[in-house]
Structure formats: C-alpha cells, structure tokens
Length: 373
Image: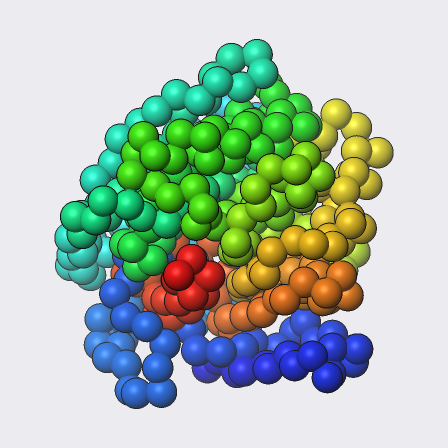
C-alpha cells in the first residue's frame, strides 16, 4: 500500500529518496487521513479487467481501472495529434466519471456556488471561475488555483473536481484560472497570465468575499509549476506572497533523463513522449527550458512560503518533485513532500474512485487550513 517517509530537518542533507511512497493516501472527498480504519467499500468494488501494465507493476486496481477506461474512450496517444485535436479527446477526468457510471457511484453533493469573472491581461483577457463554499460566512480565505495540461491542453472544466474539492474541504474561496496556452500563446504567456490573475485576485478579493490577507496558491502538473513560479514572481515584484504553496506533481525542470523518466517513460496518462510534446508546443525554443520559471530546480527559491508537494509514484515527474523539495529545503523553505504509491499522474482529481486521491486531497486540505488560519 502506501509507505511513509518523514523528512526531518536534521537529516535534510542525506541523499534524497524519490522512488518510495509516503503517508496515507478528485472529484470530491469528505474524509481526512487518520489512524482509524477507513471505509473503502466504495473502492473495493472497482476492479480492472486485464493484467497490470508493464509500465505500472505496482498500480492499484482502482487506478488501473481508470487507465483501462481511458484507453477505451481515448485510444490515440495525444502526442501523435495536433494540439487542437488533442484538446478534443476525452480526459482522465472523463475516464473517472465513466468509472463512476459503470459502478453506480453517485457524485457527492456540490457544496459550493460558482461564478465567472474576466481578468484583464496583456493583449486581452482571461476567464476565472470563483468557487464559494455554501457555509454562509461573510469572508473566506483565498486560494488561487492553476489547472494542468502541459500549458497546451485542458481547461478549468477538466480540473473542476480539484478546485471544487479544495474550496469545500478548506472552506475557502478558490479562483481557478483559465490561462492562455501554447502553441497559440507561447512561453511565458501562461506564466504571465497566471501572475496577472494572482494580482487581480488580491486586488479584487473583497468583491467576492475573499480575504486577501489569507491567501494560498495551488496547482497540478503544469499548474503545479505555475503555483511556484507565480510565488517567485510575487516575491521579485514586491507583491504579497501567498501563505502557502500546494504543488501537485509539478513540472519542475526541462529534461527527460531522471530516474522516473526512465522508469515510467511509457506510463499513462503521462509519458515521456507526451512531456516532450508539451514542451515543444509551449516553448519558443529548447533554450527556454533553462529559464527559472520552467526549471524551478535551478531557480532562486529563497523566501518562498512553506510548500506542500504531492507526487504520484507511476509518473515521469516523480523524481523532479523530490528534486524540487530538496532545493526548497536548501533555500530554507519549509516543505513537506508526499508520494503516493500505486497511482499515476492525474490521480489527485479522482477521489470518488481512487482512495489515494481521497487521502491526498484531505492531506492537502489540512495543510492549507493550517496555513490559512
């Protein structure tokens, strides 16, 4: 199942361990990680049809079922398509919803209200979706959230489950940002849009019941990169920094030669060829890969807020998540990294069908609640 790695300050200089899992394991989850026995009956019924894939010998039955379902609804590798074609394909989130239907798993009640706003950015405007808990408070902490998709595909709709879950479990307002993507808008457009949305959220927080003095920043995959990069930009420009960063399986470097890239080169839904495809369509040229906004592990990370990093075991990005955690510690930034075994990239948003996602989400929410008190 899931192992625990406790990284304490007095052992921070020891060799990093990237390949082991840690801690107890999204559409929407309601429970938190405890030592008490958790009811997994909803998950136990979910069983795959075939053998475990060669690229994922440790994959859990629930995760394998989602991947098998994704193979049936989106069989064409995205890296063989144009970006426009790839954006039309069903996503891992769609596969998780299909599994829910196949096993008669009902979606939990939606305990947030949503509204859209337009945010001015250089050369136009972008859309944000604001999630407000239905708990009736006059003011809430603020989380600015960035979705994944390699800066090329996916939308705030694709990652709706994660944003909604954070709003509900943290009891905070979440601003989910629809930044512009490549190849139509190359680097650093997504990064600049994300920073503009962060500044807009701070400046306009009172208009949607958010408290700009209690702000965190979060994101998944490319969005996990953006969460750290925007925090760096805020620091460098003298803007209020977030109180906490949640970075879920972040893209943290340009390069394809790490241990996890080698071990999980053919993993699904994220593979080495797909990561190369993402970079090809977002960067203007390979030299931009060394930019600190892309290669976070080579950036100045000093004076960033406390950070939570969540990684999946069966993921080409696993190793660089550990590298980023080590670089943050070296810069004296408090950081906790949790690595969940048996699951793949994109697991975080699948809590209704994957227990590790339920637990990862609950852990992330607790970290954010503690930071936003």
